[in-house]
Structure formats: C-alpha cells, structure tokens
Length: 203
Image (cartoon, rainbow, N blue to C red; front, side):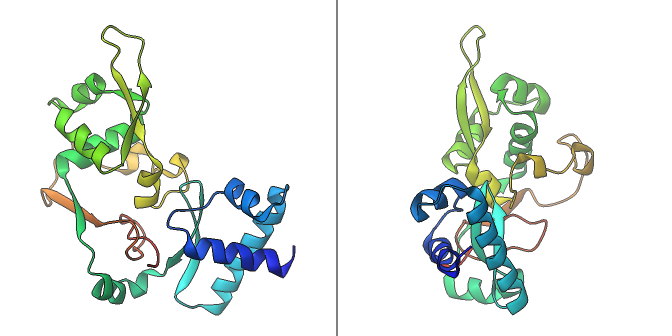
C-alpha cells in the first residue's frame, strides 16, 4: 500500500457527503484489488486513533465516512444550529417494524400496530428512511417496503445485521413512558453519542 493511495482516499472521504463504498473508491483510485483499499483505510483509521484528534473513520451504511467525535457535538451544534428531524412515537414504531420485518407490506404493518399507517409510511418515505422495494404477488399488488441507506446512516449501522436483537428493544405494544415525539438532527451536522440517532459528519 502506498502513502499516496491512503491520502487520496482521505481526500475523497473528506469531501464526500455520503459514506463511500469500497467499490466507489476502487473506481476513483483505479485499483483492481479491494485489499489495497481496505489496507489503506485501516492505516488511516489507525492514524486517527493514534492522533486522538477531532475525527475518526467510521464504517457505516455499507461504506466509510470521516466523522467528528461525539464529545465535540455541542460546539458543532452551536456553529451549525441544525434543525432536528422529528419523528413521532407512531413513526418510530412503524420504522422499527419495517426495519425488522422487511420486506414488508402495509397490511402486515397495520396488523402489528392495529391502526392505519398510510400517512406514517408516506412521511417516512419523504424523510428517505424507507423505500418501495417492489410489489407483492397478491391481489391489488401491494407495495413492499424496506429501509434505505440513509436509515443505516442515521442510526449508525454498518448494515442491517447490526440491528439489536428484537428482545433487546421495546416492542410497539410495550407500555412505556416517554415523549410523544423523538427527534434527531439532519444527517450532515454533528456526531452522535453511542446508541442515539446519528448527527453525522463534518460540514
């Protein structure tokens, strides 16, 4: 691995607004072996950890992204003043069902929640947290829903296998106290603390 490739990748990661996949980086750098890219990323990540500065390299949403460390979030928020994206409890419950049951159709979601979910599904699609995967071979050809890459980014997941086990999270029917609305900053504002929705990377 050459130092030049490592720093080329660093420059690409620095300017990219979304996580970059290994394949994307291979195309830009014009190398054929994924191993070369992975070794360069590993070395870059180790440099950041050894330096202990404001940034670190994060594997998320099927790619890699340079992010700010959580402890600097308050100062970043003061600068950027991001407007939070608000999700109601109903939206969070619906999103959880889609995440764990995907591919899933609307009637299945409504059967679990016991209420109409059409408006909530439209809102989640507008926020690019879920998407239509296709249509199911049933009468009426209902839409099939799944989560998006942005969903992985927002909740800081490398892929869907990193979702917590269902028994580790509260189900929609579990009585609980808490706010009727949850919020998280728009992707691209600041880094989050572990276990909270993603505040994302540098400007």
